[in-house]
Length: 81
Image 1 (tube, one colour):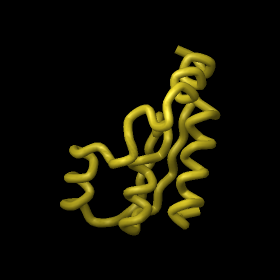
Image 2 (cartoon, rainbow, N blue to C red):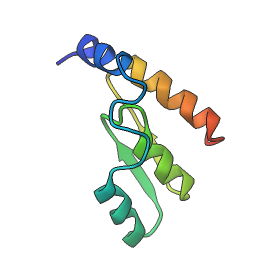
Image 3 (cartoon, rainbow, N blue to C red):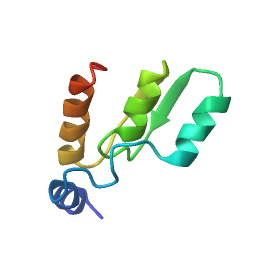
């Protein structure tokens, strides 16, 4: 699956996986000491933005430029970027 597949998929929905962080991810952040995170294939950024809001230093990326644009827009809206 390449960039075109994911760009098309992300462009069809306001948010593909929703705006709240993954439950498992959220629960793990509660028990780990803050630090740095690398989140590949992060999509629209819901997990990255959640972690950054808790004080984690986050690096995230995705193949989809559409998802990246959505993540950056959401980050600006949330004042995380």
